[in-house]
Length: 191
View 1 (cartoon, rainbow, N blue to C red):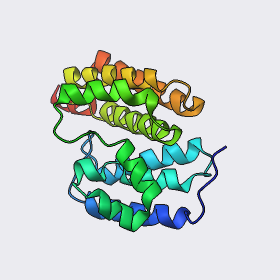
View 2 (view 1 turned 120 degrees about the vertical axis):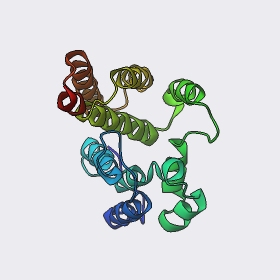
View 3 (view 1 turned 30 degrees about the vertical axis):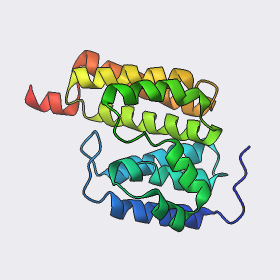
View 4 (view 1 turned 120 degrees about the horizontal axis):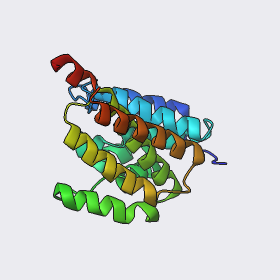
């Protein structure tokens, strides 16, 4: 069981959701939905997995892409949401300047060494990304490559949380079925 840290709470998570909606206002996710939908889904996954007992993890879930995607300085996250949230966000943030192949390789190599919270956040993030791709398969090859890479990362995260792992495998299976059947909504419209 995960206990929330003293001083953190659901008001912090809601403030993070509000801030993330501003920082990512013009961004789209893999399924072309507003990016905030992805952040809400990741937060919902970790909240369900922890039975609502870890609002700090939910806070980090809303902010996990702020450095990479919205180019927010870590100091801004630290000042607004605290050291623990900032440290967790940075733990799941890729090093800047890496090529796509280097980033992919490092995520697989480092996954097993992450903290428990970071592992849950990584798994929830990959699950949401797979779900998004399954909703909107625009390129079978890219979606297939992402699925295989996400599976390699998830393999290193085994033992993190049974429910989250089940959600990941359901999303992976759904995406693979969509790729095999060519039934992604975009592909259906162009057929």
